[in-house]
Image (cartoon, rainbow, N blue to C red; front, side, top):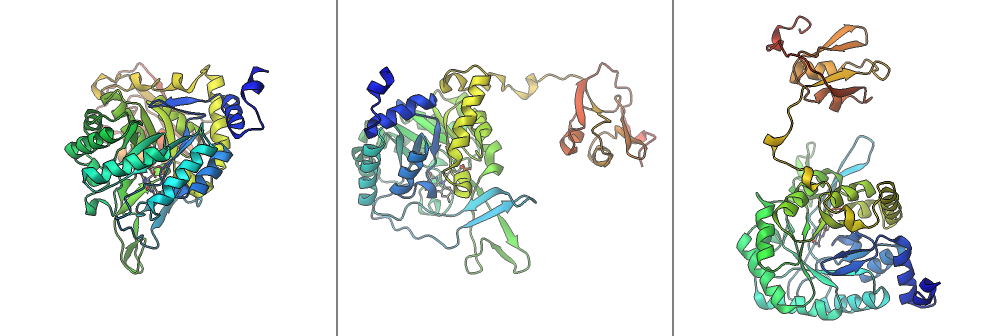
Length: 432
Ligand SMILES: Cc1cc2nc3c(=O)[nH]c(=O)nc-3n(C[C@H](O)[C@H](O)[C@H](O)COP(=O)(O)O)c2cc1C
């Protein structure tokens, strides 16, 4: 009853409020509240105001605009500029691009930001910006985007292609001092939160995160794409994607980069106290939860939207709600960083006696476990007869290689109190 008074469904604001209540996934990032933790990352799905509006209508909690730039900066995209790595099934597992920042005039963007915020006041709209290493350029751009109504700014210090050769993008995020200085310039110019988007293409992302914090950053976002060379057409003998027979290095995104994104978020979480926006390879709600549990306050998604469309938001939100119900979480905030204390130094990890065992009911006798244990392991798997294998516990080192290659999940590791007496497995009688 109270809800219907506050949330008048005949007004846009009321409908927005009702939406927010119904989802119950509301979360806050650097003081900006959003109805759910799923944001569109800065990329083609946020390259036009009308796309952002449609995504919001479909349920996205927020969006980071395609990176905006001062009007004087010339931007010309190569065509084609995308290439992919596919699994045997045809599914895209890695996506490479060498697209640059927006080509659209700033004035058009500022008008669109204003309209989006008027129409969708409770969704988070973050303006991504990039300029040359020039205080006035950064401050002017930041100020204009703030005045247009953006809730926060995201500084693109991380684009790995095209812009670094012009001393922008990752050229800034690979330099701790520049990162700190430019963050400071922007902080001086605006009152809204300033988020720094970092590159994984550095030796130590934690160091860069610390410098962004020193410059006054309110939050960090990671990762931008991972610098890559997607492949070579060996018949034409051309690098891919071929632009008239030539190519250049690009940025890899999508499922393949998730482990790098997760690692970066965990490292930034350990190194700074700043709130984090996590991204890289999120294809479903489980992936998003991984980022939250490792310390991200929200997540951004680009590639999965590029290959599946805005509609994935339904599965993301419903999956997250179910997970939270099952695990007794009443807010997204409660989940943030829950797994972080379980990341410890290598030397502190337990050294128990784990041994592989094969479940005969599941084993189809393909023999792949024996091959890999023989050629890259400890020679612990013996073929007893046709399609029958035995793990010799005294030889097994518990490395898990056999469990990784088994397609039937027929091998598991368990603790076994045995004395490992045979040290030199090459003398084992069952090896060739
Ligand atoms: C085609 C394409 C264009 C992109 N453009 C931008 C951009 O303008 N600014 C930016 O900060 N990141 C840009 N990104 C990087 C994404 O925002 C994101 O950091 C990266 O793709 C990792 O997330 P994902 O695996 O969900 O795609 C772009 C990515 C792609 C694939």
